[in-house]
Length: 131
Image (cartoon, rainbow, N blue to C red; front, side, top):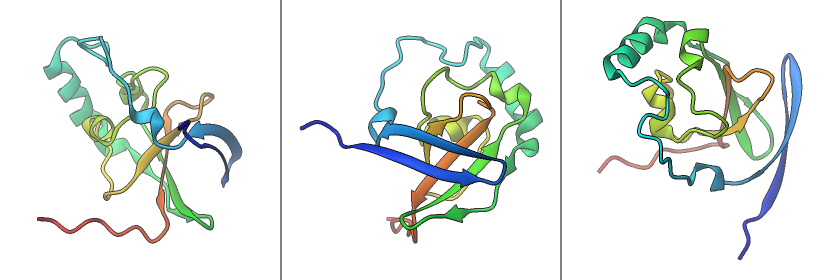
C-alpha cells in the first residue's frame, strides 16, 4: 500500500519547524552521478573533512512523546559536500565527519539553514547487540 504520511512539529530553541514527510522513504534513492558531492578529487574531500570536522557542533538531545531529537551544525566549508535536496543516509552523514551514536535518522532539511542537520531516533533507543 501507500506509505503513511506523517506531520512532524517540534521546537528548536531559536525557531519552530513544521514539515511533512514520508517516514523512511526519503532514504531510498539512486544517484546517477558518479560524484554526488561535486568534488572529483577524493583527497581534496578527505582533507576538507579532516580540516573542519572538529568544528562540527552537536546540540543537546531534546524529546517529545515518541522521539528524541538533536541538530548538528556544520561549518560552512563542509556544507558544500552535502547532497542537494535530499536526506542523507547514515553512511553519507558519517562520511562528511558527523559522529554520533547509532540509531539517528537524518529526517528533515531545514531549507533556510541547510548547514543545520536535523536528526531523530525513537525515544529510549537501544542499539542492537554486536554479533
